Length: 306
Image 1 (cartoon, rainbow, N blue to C red):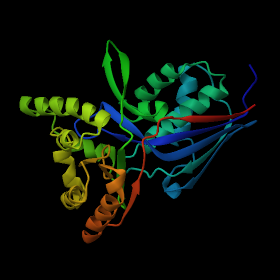
Image 2: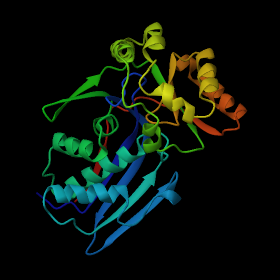
Image 3: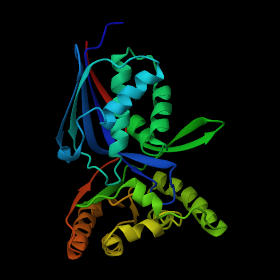
Image 4: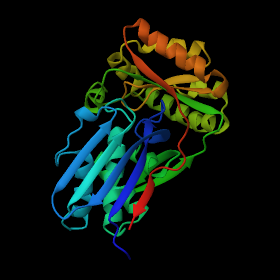
């Protein structure tokens, strides 16, 4: 096998939870970060351009490099000297899986420079171990909408059919919300009634995503395990939700840990929903970038130079 000297990995943003699928379901979106890895004779060089680049560390604490190093530690090898060039379009700390793109990008780049000693499944297992949960890293790696469940320390990954009429509209506000902060507001225990509620709604969500049945989705996107607690951390949540529903959204959820809000609608209503969500947040004194996206079906894409 020829030695790879340079590889570029393009990784999609992801939206996790989709309402009732807390910590188990996620979908890849058509918004991307790009990571270029080039072998060096010595040292480590990291550069970052694009959205939020000024806040990303460029020393060895960079998350992409940390994932790169973890890969080689997993093989009990010393990581090679490398230049990592990062181009960002996925905003940080907004609930769109920016950390998952970094982890997946770092692991795939390392795997390719090492001659691909790990399979895609093994890379996925390592990504889940680093991230701590599967709902972002799995769709970032594989694309599509994915459900993950574990038993006996092994993961089962199921692709969820996503109707091509469904349009995810993401409203990205100009403030950050860390996953740690968003988890701290969650209760340590939930009632049986709330657990049953989410179980039923997740089942309905899976069928709603497959069929684009708007009545099913309007019900299915509701949740009682995390969103009622997290929405207090997102100013204007109720106003944006009302605006989205009034203009044709099937429902609105917190994307990941937030603060990005995601509405599901169809192509006919997507522009009206996007405009309404922008206006609702503006009335709260909050600027937001709102984008109509699609489901990314490819996952991480590789470009290799020998």
